[in-house]
Amino acid sequence: MVRKGKPVLARKQRGKLIVFEGADGSGKATQVELLRSFLEKKNYPHVAFDFPRYQETFHAKTIAKYLSGEYGDPTQQNPYLVSLVYALDRLTAREEIYYALNDGKVVLANRYVSSNKAHQGVKLPKSKRKDFFAWLDELEYDVNKIPREDLVIFLYVPFAVSMRLVKERGRKFTGRVDLHEENRRYQKEVEKVYLQLAKNPQWVKIVCVGQNGTLLSKDVIHAEILRVLKKKAILNYS
Image (cartoon, rainbow, N blue to C red):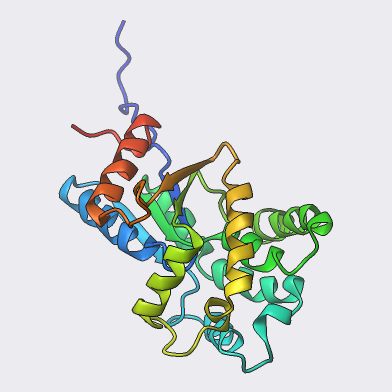
């Protein structure tokens, strides 16, 4: 017997939050843009965020001053206090991200919570990093209630290669010298933390250099990202 009345509508499937992480100079912005172009061609509804949002929020402008050394050597600043400012920058995007996810969109983020774990965690002794990571998770996900990532794509570029790329690129976003990037010892430690974080099952590490140590082309890296997204059923396309 067929019941008459209003049709039953299928609930819209929640979107996915895909985060790109990696050391400075690893090509995160490039790969986000390539994926955006791909999603556009495939008519996938999507939106992208670039953190910190230097041109949009008060908090990110404060971060730019911090990175340029206006408040002192950034590598010596308290990681808990610094992380609060980064968290506030992400908090301003919370409603936009939730709206997009609830609308079934793919959400791309160039950097997210894990960036703070890597770049601020290195300031602490290894024995204290676990507590810092737990504190940061509580702040971001439980207190600020920003959405958790569905997948983190870690673009791994060895330290020596990434430093060369940073030097060639210059400061695109802040227009200032980034003292985090200038400190080679600091960046080397950041790489180590990222490699530890990449062991998380929600992470996928993509090696962006060939056996000879040269950087793979952006299209080759992009193709590998698409393969991963399809394998994990985050994207479904022909």
